[in-house]
Amino acid sequence: AQKVTQAQTEISVVEKEDVTLDCVYETRDTTYYLFWYKQPPSGELVFLIRRNSFDEQNEISGRYSWNFQKSTSSFNFTITASQVVDSAVYFCALSEAGRGAQKLVFGQGTRLTINP
Amino acid sequence: EPEVTQTPSHQVTQMGQEVILRCVPISNHLYFYWYRQILGQKVEFLVSFYNNEISEKSEIFDDQFSVERPDGSNFTLKIRSTKLEDSAMYFCASSPWGGGYTFGSGTRLTVV
Image 1: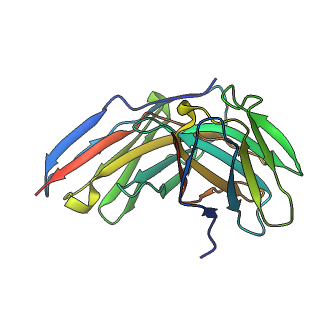
Image 2: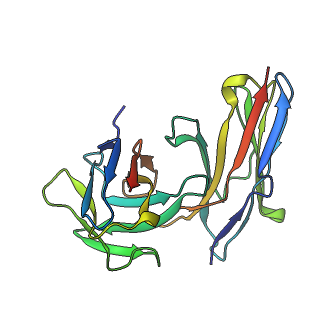
């Protein structure tokens, strides 16, 4: 069975600090996708990234970066120079990488609060 | 950019009433999904749908729930007799062949 663990329930930092959100996953699949979503107070799920299990290269997008370590089954997310607008709940998710319907298994989420 | 549209954005219903949540997936997508998020909790998979039938469902998706694609564009989730514990945000999603997910903005269901 697939499982995603986000051990950090809540994180609070001061603006401009760097912050890392942890994600550890379990799966028996040899190929899979990992995702990060942002859920602002308005409630929608905002897609941030999808990473294929074959691609272990780290990715950077502006102030966001992701570190995928297959050896430790982790897919951590770092926000550099955090801003108040980054305040949200962040979810890590996992799906099997097939060609059919692929359900997402979500972690419990990390509530990130950026204080001015 | 194409989007998944959900209506209504918020629905209040009396306990025991039937409710239908509506979704319009992206037109060239093949797979459709419903997820549920109880307030303050994680997002949970309910059901996936392909080729006019359910391809997978979770334990949550019991006989109270049903899904339908009544025409070429809509995808609906019906809850037959709502309970207080059905209060949640319901997300619809769709994906094309080969992966990639798009979520709708959700319907907040409140059962009173």
